[in-house]
Length: 135
Image 1 (tube, helix red, strand yellow):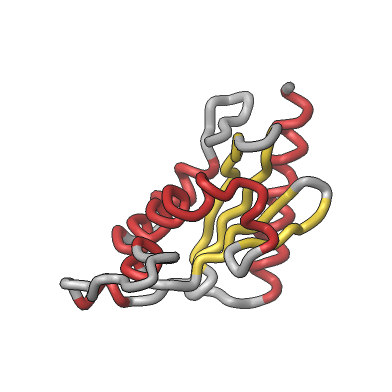
Image 2: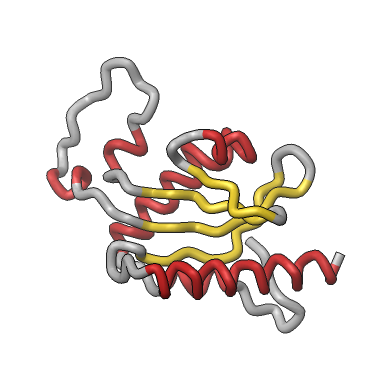
């Protein structure tokens, strides 16, 4: 996770605004999808290149679906809540092959408007510029 010059971590702050289930889904997706795939996630249903080194992780599945993604015969979810889908976006960049820097996340399901999406992307671009200037 990236911190600005003042030690503020926008990703941690944005995750804190999510409910506990959304946080669990986000953690599972970062662990099971983003971390192993790195930049390759942008060429799948899970990601999108936004240009100039900024990427979007698209989470629109349940906790159970993420934990069992890629299994040919996934077990059934024992907890019905684990089947509740979410709609989250996470903005990130990569450094080298595998290091992923997480800038921020938001609940797109709570506000799916284009205006909100543009605002979040603009904020992520600001963080990307700040990170680049600090290297």
